[in-house]
Image (cartoon, rainbow, N blue to C red; front, side):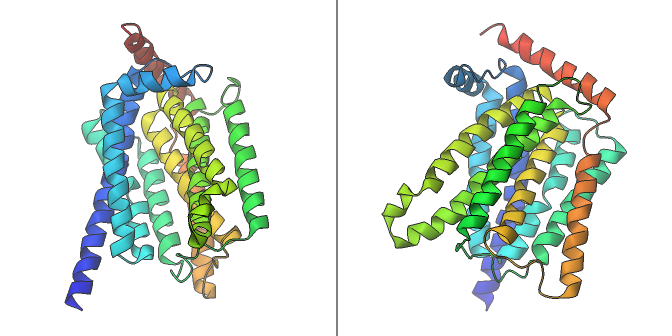
Length: 307
């Protein structure tokens, strides 16, 4: 019993460090993306090289790799429901790190929004019951419908961020699209893990193509959203979109239950509603957001000139 308790404790410490590292990595990548030349999808390889030439972007990716390793360790050592709750609640680290060490000034509404999202995501994972978390069996029809809708919404968001008349921060729209891409990739990875049970031939699954395509899309969408948007808002909505889409996929694609009893169902429905409220509070008001975007874009252009 002592060794089991020790393993769980180590797992929770890994989860806490992973949450800290993930948000720190996002903030470092934001600093690097702003200093790099504008991402141009007409020249994807050049844009990728330019990003990694930025010291802070590369450091951010290195930190993200360590955070991912800690994430895997946490889910291996600790119960997935508890470990995931710690990881989801890690959004609070974003606010603290951004304000204390990266020069951001968060308004009260942003603190409230981040707090609501962190608590709600934690409630969703803690009330999930955990019994279906490891299940990789999926409904093919549900998978196609979910991935298809997510792809269409992502494309619509990318197109919408180009329309200046839309009264929303354009970086936020692109950040949500990036988060959906991360969610699509995560869902396809979980489905592929089930296909691999039959041997390495499972790698020939169409989900492998989905994983790579979604990952590439998210790489560029996330980088560009960090260049043109308020860093805290963009990082927060990217995380919310990725987490929420994965949770919804668990219900639609993998057959997870909304709850094991009426109380759990009520709590989870309320948590979904609070996530939407919190996410709406995180971006700064439109006029303030436009000013933040202009101040973010200018340093990026200045940083691009020496290259």
